[in-house]
Length: 343
Ligand SMILES: NC(=O)c1ccc[n+]([C@@H]2O[C@H](COP(=O)([O-])OP(=O)(O)OC[C@H]3O[C@@H](n4cnc5c(N)ncnc54)[C@H](O)[C@@H]3O)[C@@H](O)[C@H]2O)c1
Ligand SMILES: O=c1ccn([C@@H]2O[C@H](COP(=O)(O)OP(=O)(O)O[C@H]3OC[C@@H](O)[C@H](O)[C@H]3O)[C@@H](O)[C@H]2O)c(=O)[nH]1
Image 1 (cartoon, protein in one colour):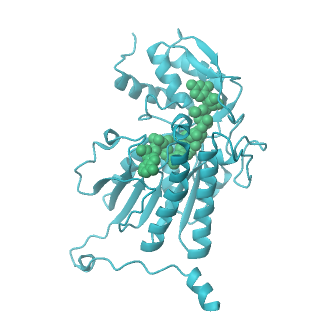
Image 2 (cartoon, rainbow, N blue to C red; image 1 turned 135 degrees about the vertical axis):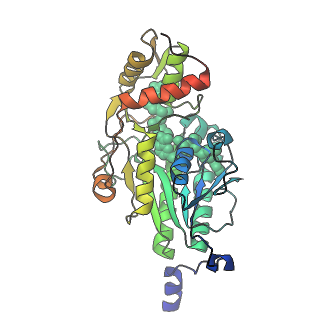
Image 3 (tube, rainbow, N blue to C red; image 1 turned 90 degrees about the vertical axis):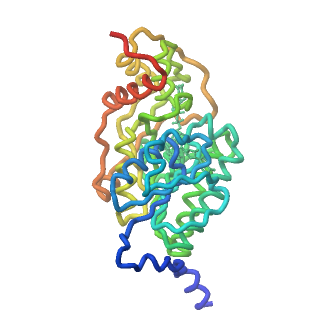
């Protein structure tokens, strides 16, 4: 029994590297896998990691919501590789770190094929943990503020266990991420895997899909096109919006630091959806109408992170205010939509 439990607790030895690694000309690089790296956050993370010449970056993505276009500046680069791969299938490669992002994140997309979403969260995370265990890699999961469900504690600390409907239309995502977190901690406790868990709050910025369906991208595209801004009722529900460069900085600090998490990463500025619509209208197109439309089931009524842990453990806090981030996103959306700014 004692023998068994020590087997279980000690991680397996990673496979032997190629003898080339011991050649006197070998430059020791950090090989980093980013699942979901062709998506919105993933592609910004690739950009940041590629800035370091010691990093080799491998992206594995099935292009469900991501696109090669987001990575076009790296395709063909000697330190970059792009693999068409679905994380619900095992992946056998040798890497030092894994940023595990693969999962549709916009409610419209994650509800489109809920069975696939939950398989991505559960089987996908199991596969990536299996890979981390085999090669001795450190693995970071991008979990979400949705693990708090429709929170009864406000603002949310990491110690809050959440208020989640286990059988609702959002469960494939929020319960899926909760299971993914459980798997991370079980592999850590049982197999000694080095884990990092980030709970990301609503993040926005350039490169979001124009038809992503999330609120910031919807409002910006609508304002540019001169269409009504669709506030889902009642409009008093709140969210806290983090600009993508701040978020990517937090993810890298978490990966490089020594705390497993979970750690909230988000901007504590809190806005109702009506306030967000008013701000977009004022900054982008004062002529647009704001229209209240029907909402979807189980929409969380309030959300705002407590980020004391990130501040103390990672020395991280967001720098970009919503009013400064929205115009940066507008610029990118105008280019892609082919609408020049008036005047
Ligand atoms: N953006 C946010 O506000 C936010 C908030 C909380 C958590 N997150 C998490 O961050 C991660 C990235 O989110 P995002 O906003 O960049 O979304 P995104 O949809 O732009 O990116 C997700 C990426 O994962 C890929 N993908 C999906 N299923 C896959 C599968 N089975 N196999 C391989 N690749 C797959 C998609 O093609 C896409 O490139 C997700 O895990 C999401 O849950 C995002
Ligand atoms: O056009 C719209 C779209 C959305 N909304 C509202 O805006 C709020 C935010 O909705 P979004 O679809 O952008 O995102 P949600 O906060 O519901 O979920 C997000 O949470 C964090 C991440 O895990 C994911 O990116 C996503 O699940 C909701 O209250 C929604 O009702 C609008 O008022 N109008």
